[in-house]
Amino acid sequence: MQARVLAFVLAGGKGTRLFPLTKERAKPAVPFGGRYRIVDFVLSNLINSGIFSIYVLVQFRSQSLLQHLSEGWEDSGLLQEHFIIPVPAQMRSPDEEWYQGTADALYQNIHLIEQADPHYVVIFGADHIYRMNIREMVEFHVARQAQVSIAAIPMPRESASEFGVIETQADGRISGFHEKRSDAPTIQGDPTQIYASMGNYIFSTSVLLRELYADAQNENSHHDFGRDILPGLIGRADLFAYDFQTNRIPGDPPEQLPYWRDVGTLDAYYEASMDLRAPLPALNMYNRQWPLRTAGYFDPPAKFVYHEGGRPGSAFDSIVSGGSIMIGGTVRNSVIGRGVRVLSGAQVDDAVVFDNCVIGRRAKVRRAILDKNVHVPDDTCIGCDLDQDRKLYHVTESGIVVVEGHRSRVDIASMLV
Image 1 (tube, rainbow, N blue to C red):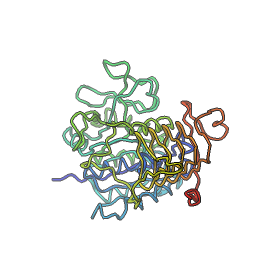
Image 2 (cartoon, rainbow, N blue to C red):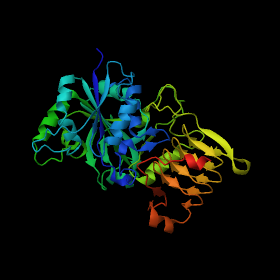
Image 3 (cartoon, rainbow, N blue to C red):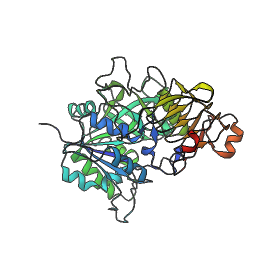
Image 4 (cartoon, rainbow, N blue to C red):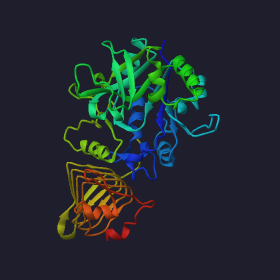
């Protein structure tokens, strides 16, 4: 008998630590890698793993996310009789409130689980950058006869306050779960590491329904999986940790290691973006057996042209997305989004540039993130004087300059004359 699997993608977080990139958009809708959005990673992992029945639970600043889903994932013909459906908060709580926590998000949509009657429910977050063969985790869950499986990965001990921390026995059975505690126990035999929950769960349906109903009646609960449901199941159900380090992607070379990054801060987001520049990047987006899917943009190819004085447009160790034109400008070690223009004499180094930006003549952009539709005027330098940049832009602790975007696209026609 083939197992019926229903997936829920939790895409409702505020993403406050990514401000100003999340000022006008949900965190899962933040661009990444030039032409993608963060949510594309979990959706691609599910589709590539043969899981096609997916609900995306949205909440804060969801318009940008809903638009992206409608452009690239809904009614695309990809899913045939299956679906990807965005679901806002249903206001099913007694006080008709927004989602109060991750468990409440599922509870407000519990009718969708009951109607589908799946064997297993896959609950994954939408705000991490990673590739994962989720089918392997489902097979692990079935083979262990688990009631709950939690994807886990070793992380430095110093990050314990940022994750749910798992204690396991030799066979992978979970004996403890500690949500975001700095004093959480380390991995046995390695005091420098913790075993961190990735926020990706598989539940056997009967257990999930039982716990969601019980949690909804508990007035003292935060209605959250990490703070309430999972710790409360210790000793009452069979919980297992799925070791993400064992996960393998079809089509990858044997030496390719699993990749997962928590991009919860601007610095982490920038570093993950810079990972893409390597000749053999840790995150392989070029595996045709495991494609990274996104909206069906109809962009022309990127172009590199000469301009003033025969100056060539060029890019080195960079990603340049469709529709972008290097018009006598130079890009190094950067990730360039769609429809970007880099004009004559401009220099872009170690930067992440979102869609439809214009880098003016002789302008310089260094160690920066430019949101959509930013126009850097001629002869301007961003990232050269951080004290001056702090007066105009947001600057992270590590010195990354983040320039807030504009709602309307810059009119660039006159700049190309």
